Amino acid sequence: MPMLLIKGKYQIIGGRSDGDTVHFTPDTTSEWDLVPGPHKVKHNTAGKAKLRLDAIDALETHFQRGGPEVSQPLEFARQARDELVKWIGFTHVERAKDDTVTAATPESVPGWILTTGATLDKRCIALAGKGTPPGTSGTMIVVDVPLLRTTLNYHMLKEGLVYPTFYRNLFADLRDELTAASQAAQSPVKKGLWTEDITTSGATVTSMASLTDPEHGAVILPKLFRRLVEYLNLGNPDLAGFPAFLDAAADRYWILSTGQSPTGLDTVVDVNDSKVKMTHPPEDLVFEEA
Image (cartoon, rainbow, N blue to C red; front, side, top):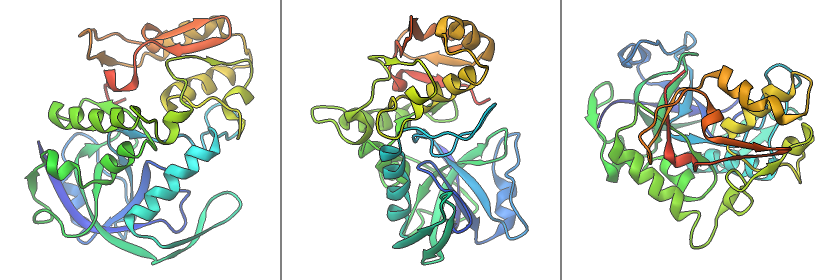
């Protein structure tokens, strides 16, 4: 799969980094203009931009939409966040009470990214790497499975610290390898968040606390968590209206195992009284970028 290689440095000071986002500044700022696709990468005058790490979704540490800021169970959310900064090469991190990074050692770490585009909100969608770049910065290179295995994205799935969440931009061979890494973290011995995951077995949701309690909140796919939070913020904890809400949200995606391309997560989410579950595992879905 051809992807644009950009060499630069990772930074976390001033941000509220979680397990699937980090700031990155290219050595040559103008290389942001080379990122393919219809959306430009938003960056400051120094070139600093936010990455959305491709194909992975970490538990939310600070989600806010239609109500107060909330988080998923913090044990696994923080494990993912801490592993991200450790893997990149930050050896010491200090945070304020709101999780904003106030100091880091070193202040930045050299690295490189591979990208095919940006999101609608102008974050660069990227595979993140460290060490010697696999080519010349600012050029398109072929990304194969061996190169994929050197990335942070692959590492986080292999360790069971994030959920696989795929979009159309990723070629099938790379998606299959990431799926295999995630499945290996689930069996024969469950690792990381998979030890508590109930996305497909079902979460009982009677209030916001069912999702956000630091110790007892449901560990579920963040995309489902976000939709549930949006729904609950409308003021009615009764899940009877949740399927219609999902239908109206109109997420577009493909179900790999069936070849279906429905609109709305209500097709793959089952609601029975206060119990909600997904009827397909996360790796069986490929989403259209919103």
